[in-house]
Image (cartoon, rainbow, N blue to C red; front, side):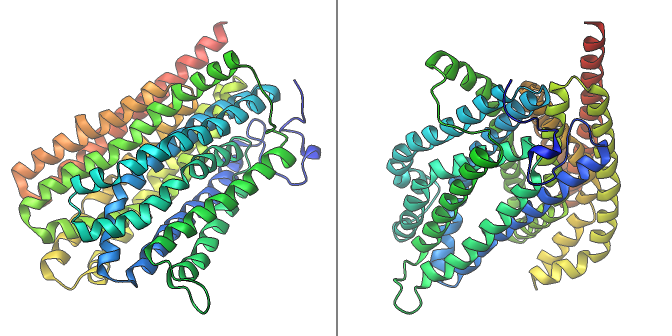
Length: 463
């Protein structure tokens, strides 16, 4: 074992949480707060792109909208890579095996870069076929091509960014990751108007400028990540571990990363089913649901932050065989999510008419928004329990359980009960069914994660 101990405060220029020794509640608070702020920054990042492109015109905004399925699919691939990286590196750090943590960091970063390079060519060659299939006409396809062809060139940097920030979280340094995400959002917001509109002598790239700004931001983030991991954390260096060891480590990484990516890809699929069902009630129902989905992202932002900060804590303590701390962290996190989401539900339900009028002046759309906001968010606490349980399964190196968690929620409870509710009670019935689905999934999955961690603890005590 080499390198400074991650728990030694004298071995760093800053004080970060010790995920294995600090009080559980304090460690979770100190890692969740910055990741939540970083998640908010990323939402603002994408909103900035959308707003600046909207100033070019409706055609450009529509073209950007068409690119969403492709960009979100590849983003979820990066999310899966990040989950696998965090689980592997954090477990090694928890076991005080810095050599293994360094090895896994190198393998994850290299894998992300190589995968990104190999994806560029097929992604570029498939542009016309994919977006024509999605319904883009010839004029819109020209605009799509200008944006997405540049965006695809940044894929290696995107995937390295996911792997690198996952290592930051694995070390407990969520604060730095949050700052990096905030800085990235700020840089993107500055570059967008410069590259899109070209003030003064600068050339105006139009919608392509938004993609150029994004790729530049990713590249700068990569430079910072490489410096931090190599110089500050001493967890990254260029070396050749040997082909056999490299392939073995990639296998460990993909064992978690692939199911995690698939689990994330289930979400837009289920949303599509609900959207298609609502389309039977008219465009107003679909528009109202779109507003609710944007509100859901904001109301669930703390859960998103916790889903990034809880896994490193669990993985490190998993590596240290500290299952009492794992179960304590789960209990605190799930209780906090339930309490927080209940308070937020009361606020959203009371403010529903005001929220609806902000997004629409049409009475039918307003009615849908108010109806849904007074039904579905009451189940967000249970939805949060599912999300945190799935991320915990990944952290415990049980990716199949995490994938099954997502499948159970969406295809056994959420979607079937929503469709049953729609058949019995139209739009209100649909979302009552969806809420009941979240409740059932939350209770079942929470019982499962508690039983699973108890079994791990008992197995450790008997060996």
